[in-house]
Length: 204
Image (cartoon, rainbow, N blue to C red; front, side, top):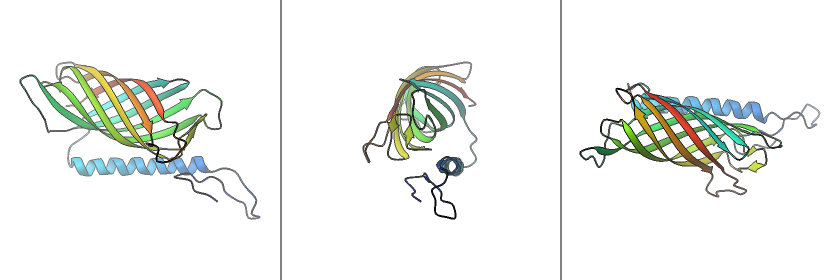
């Protein structure tokens, strides 16, 4: 029995013969546990603060589609504040599914990520903004179709822009370009790149 990263590759029967693969069940359990731990950690950090926002994202790379749901917690700190603009940010916790239409041994995977996002925005939080973030991600498995990632742990960085509107700036529509890779910690490192459209609602 071999345990590469967070996957358990194969089980054996009582006679020592090679049995069915059980990696999917183990990795899903791992992702669920990691998701719970991340939510618990964020709850401790934010103490009594409730979730500030919820988001849905849809993205695409060549033959690869992505869907993500996420929760956000805004930072109270403002940097470089001027008469109209400031640099702020938020924590972004997301759970995504990636799916590849190309033939392969594995064409779906789940991904859990936590990213601190810095956003240049108006003081009243409405209007155009620019943002960037670098975070950590955990993949359910280390392959997707013809892509090989070698490690379940990945770094994720993105650049984006968008527009907030509504009386309180509660509606948020944005674009992101995101790159996931393990920074060549181990090869092969195919990485994932995608153009993403993001719809978000801010509760405060």
